[in-house]
Image (cartoon, rainbow, N blue to C red):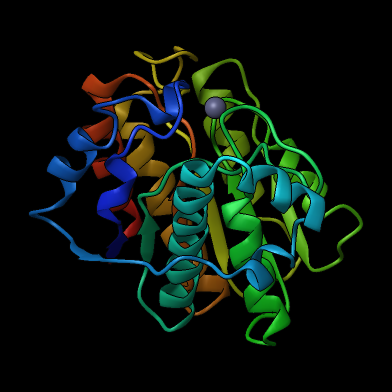
Length: 251
Ligand SMILES: [Zn+2]
């Protein structure tokens, strides 16, 4: 398991909760002794254009700090996807998050759709023919869904149960889709935790979801699997939640 992280993700690039000071520190602390860290390079504008229109990219560019960190986040998702494609599970410990970034607009603390940029890059290079995206963030990833509208090769799932057991059952069902895929990508938002905004999942549930993701990927797509950080705002539980997810996801 490789963790993709860049020290610039510590920077407070806006005043939203995803960019809050002190958010990345507990996660790094929980992971750094257990997993090997890799540093990403920024995504190229060409990579972004696989998902986003030029005018959206120009809009984001008006804030140079957000643009620079945003390129690194997208680059982090790309490196996670490439690492997974080559046979090692990976997690992009990145921000800003991406699943509310649509091709021509964005909201919800997101600017570029990191996971969509990474998947479209693998698709365009002919490395994969299809992908399954599981998004267990509290919020629906409208940006990711919009990026793959009408796509026959990429399935986007966002389980929505309001009871814990129901949510987990639905998550399992999503992973068992009959549509073929060559990689599993997880938009891992931790804001559904019982001590975060959603008030639902226990820390152990993230281990379970990680383990199920590993198992289906070994069954269906040579073990190719990666995740990227989306939401999660209670700094006092984020570190252990991410760690348990990665322990489930890793070999
Ligand atoms: Zn969220």
